[in-house]
Amino acid sequence: MSLLHMVAASPFTHRALEACLARWSDGDALLLMEDAVAAALDGAVTPLPGNGPVFVLLPDLVARGLAARPLRHGATPVDYGGFVDLAARYDGSVSWF
Amino acid sequence: MRFAILVTEGPHGHQATDSALAFAGAVLERGHQLPQVFFYGDGVLNANRLSAPPAGERHPVRGWSRLAAEQGVELLICANAALKRGVREATLAPGFRIVGLGQLAGMLVAADRLITFGA
Image (cartoon, rainbow over all chains, first blue to last red; front, side):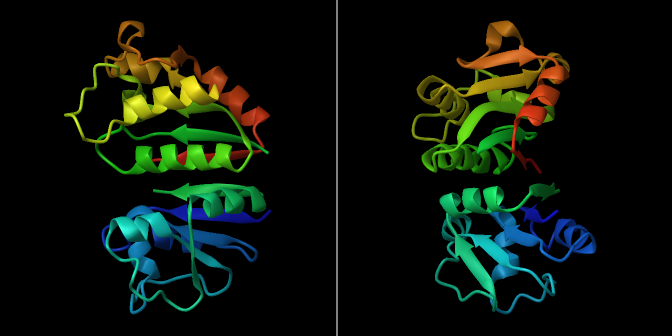
């Protein structure tokens, strides 16, 4: 069963991203949103999944003035419509707090 | 596809409510179904019609009520969580309904996808 992992908390203040990665399975995908979009920026040293796609919610980058910043290799921006498509494409989702 | 949304955070302490509202709109725009949104824990504070932000500020409670009125989405809030937080029938914003957790179970069984917004 493929999962869409949603992480919203900042990787600098919360361990949600690490908790998510500890439960990662092949075929899963990661969506970084809200304060977690910082983890998608080029130069960020916080861990990302070694395999599997990484998406970042563009409106949350825009809201933080980060939309012009380059993203880490492999991170793909999506809008809310793209978020819905991801939720539909994967068998289930997990929100990490 | 039939979606369900669970909101576990209040409207003014965190972005979760804004994310949930934007996601709900996008679900419907994409042509999917969103019969119900369930509010649990501090999420029930989204149902408080006494919420009155200053003019020009974001108004999430009104945003939910509009979603209910315009799209027919049922807004269900957990009875125990509501009582605990002083949210009563008399203070419910339009579109919200106080229900038991059995309704949450029913929503989950009927939905193809559940997306949770919290913090």
